[in-house]
Length: 82
Image (cartoon, rainbow, N blue to C red; front, side):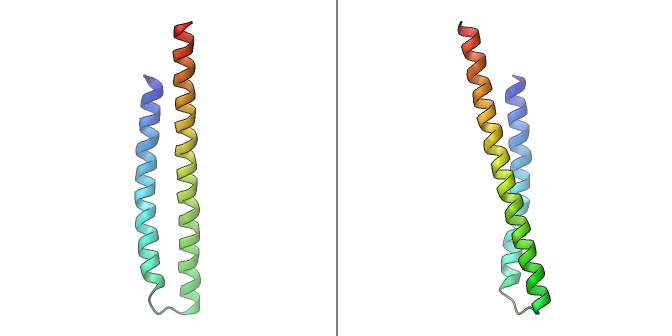
């Protein structure tokens, strides 16, 4: 039960992070299509790069936690059945 609660909490946090990052990425993308000075273009580019990296990290964390949860559940079920 604790494993499921932990996985659910991580998914909730991950979803909130990804939703916020999607908003940041979308707005930065729209901003990049406007006329910007070279300095502003560099700032928008940095925002896009950093937000994409954070999104990848969030995706990787969720994938790893999901795999760990599946492995823990399988291990528990195997030990109960033995």
